[in-house]
Image (tube, protein in one colour):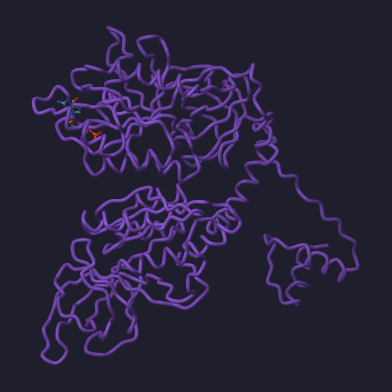
Length: 569
Ligand code: GDP
């Protein structure tokens, strides 16, 4: 039958279709009846599953051999992450190798003095680390937490420790900058112990390696320590299987087409192999190691830059070597098609307080993971202690990260990667974090009264969470000016930065990232006229119910309470 005839028939039946539309089974069968034809519906084999199944076969013991550990460097800004990565890279430059090593790919492998290999991920920092985890890629065995001996543990050090812990990776501490006059190693050890990282020298199990990225002191010790930890972890991989692993990064470059840095995690990859990576595929044309030298084979825990893919794979996506090009092409096409569906489905898999109890009932979870952000160290202590006390025999409340300050995108990706809920006490999410949370369906709940917070968590744990008072953040605004009116008090001149504000909605007034008042919007005006709502990009004047203290530079968060089956996300 001609497509136009079918489209016309569908139109008569009230279905707007075009030549690219997909029809469901029922519609197809109805159409067949209408045309008095018989149809056979053939299910397309799931090529993608076939490919992945091929790589999921059990490794036989005799095929397993040691592989290098994969290491990520985390720590506070300026404590020397980049300098350490450079210093480690330099240990591989032989005398007389002019110009050093300029090639820069996502990971590099070096030899330790005793001849073992270790691989470093070249993107330091816990944000990137957790971002990869949030995308489903687990590529790190050991996290090196860099602590500058002159500075000691700083907020981001603790954040990095928590991110590493949430990922369940081995932690080693590089105590950097010991060359500095004001270096204080003892203080750093004490601070580490306070974070439950008891150094070996103090009878604990955490390897702390004093070093200096500048003088090179201790770098070899650090490398040997990595090799030792790898031995303890007994890291092994099948070196003979068809390769699979993770795409670290991918770029489009003129002349070379798609280049991708891939980390092989199982098997060995050779030039000429047919690769399926994300929704791209192709034959590996060229393989370069981190020194920019062409190689013909890359084994487990080795990263190489490859060319030959048809399309850019996303960072963090898995790659597999497959048998033939046709299979790779159809799997790639299928993937593209599926990506959208998967994205939709993924939106429903994150944890919310509301879903917690049913998840518990299905015994999927024995743990409620929380990330806590508060306005001050004092309140942080009280809040975390009180929340910890809510643990029951059935469910453990575990706080995987806590800190002072507003909710950041780092918190959001940690929550996504670790299936956690974020609770803010007297703080809200910064606009970028709020957007990220909305996109990734991560739940952020803000409270200003501790009993409300505890009550909600308690109720969530027992499945009694009221289907009331769902908070939905609808917009943000900044105060550009304030005016006094003898009749209505302080009027805030606002610029709506995103979303909208509506009359009678709820609001949180924040100053320097801390909530100073939570209440209701009283009047809302544009050019003297009372209005129902004002959208992003517009200015308006607003008064707050029973509150006068508003200053230029304050930020507003607007939210509504809806009644519905509870899902705060
Ligand atoms: P990152 O932000 O953690 O990547 O830190 P960088 O590697 O950029 O280092 C920050 C600053 O500290 C730079 O000026 C480095 O030169 C300096 N630095 C890094 N490691 C050392 C060290 O071991 N000793 C001294 N004295 N300075 C260092």
